[in-house]
Amino acid sequence: MPKKKRPIDLSDPNLSSLILRLAIPSIVGLSINALHQVVNAIFVGALGTQAIAAVSMTFPIVVLLTAVGQGIGVGTASFISRHLGAGEYLEASRGASTALALAAPIGIMFTAALLLNLRGIFVTLGATPTIMPLALDYATTILFGYTLMLLNIVNGFIVRAEGNTRFSMWTMMTAFILNAALDPVLIFLLDLGVRGAALATLVSQIAAISLYIAYFTKLRGMVLVRMSHISLRTARIRQLALIGAPATMTSILSAIASMLLYGAAAPFGDDSIAAVGIAVRLLVIGALPITGFCIGSQAVLGFGWGARDFARVLKAAKVMLSVAFALSVAYSAAVVILARPLVRLFSDSEKVTEIAVSSCIVFHLFFWLFGIQSFVTTMLQSFGRARLSAVVSLARQSYLFIPAVLLFPVIWGFKGLLASQAFAELGAGMIALFVMFNQFAELRRHPASRAIEMTS
Figure 1 (cartoon, rainbow, N blue to C red):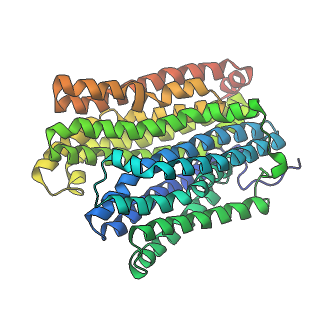
Figure 2 (cartoon, rainbow, N blue to C red):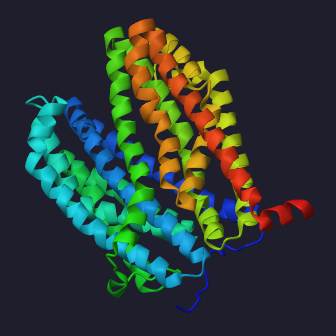
Figure 3 (cartoon, rainbow, N blue to C red):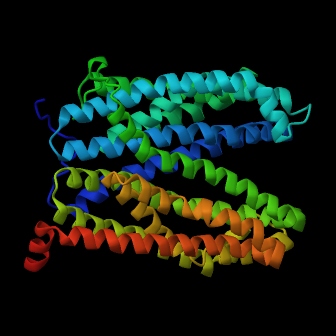
């Protein structure tokens, strides 16, 4: 396959500049994606309590569906960047084409299964007779666009894997602006209510898929998406699935962990639930730029690993670690120091404020380790190390947090609830540190890495 000019050269020797050029659009794009949900909630909130409750009740379903796309996307991005680094452009194209070919039927199957069981799902989630029709209206419309949403998520990972994070950012920005413009028109002017909000999201997904189709049709990048490149070889599909599975499980377990956290807070009253909600929201806000940075710069690690340029991989890893760690330390310190004024942005209640301030401080005591954990997970995904990636990525929201949030509140009450998050954060950080030092030691054992270190 002839080599085409990349939007960004992944072999650029100026690593710091390269990583920032890749990461900044990814951070912006991820933040826009989160803002997408906020804007929808603002407009729907004007329709009343039942409307916002109906949309909120659909959120766990959206999280589940998004998790599937992220799993496929992470596995595909790792596959593509490693094969591009090795100069295997045809194999990278086969991976991308196969992933999209698998995503479409998966999306259709999920859509059909959920549509057939939607009422029962909402009953299980506790939908009241007044909320049920609104929830069904919103979720049914959203689900008809799910396959497009899934394809857009995977397309975004493909484009970022070949270094064009800027195109991914502009695509997400276009979808966001269109959604925000259509929301008031469809919800209020055409009087479609919650269905209008869902339709606005659907139209924005159509716009995004159109941009990605144009991107691949006009051969804007290194990867060619073609029907002829689709290959259902078991080994190739297994590679895509194994790397992506931990990402999917992390997203799903994150939703489950949130439900368990709120469930554990419920016996302590509404004020405690609200306070924990504020602390969790601040955690998510802090995690967004760090996650966006790691996702955006992942292509550098994968490309270097595929090229067997271990000295470059080690150098890039150190740059990424420094930035991710600095971001998490700065945010952790800011929340601990400024907890009270930050909480005041979300609540005027004195009682909620007092509880939320202590919740935020405890929740963010060890958040400075999140940057390390996020970086290590990304590094392992880039190297194609699925098992180790699962060990690191699942720690914070799964095998450390879930037992803690079920046990600690029983022993120590509300303080135990707060301690469960701090314990999981600290434990996950320690595991990530241990794995990171082992990986760095392995990289240094390669002759090329040692040669670079001796001359630097």
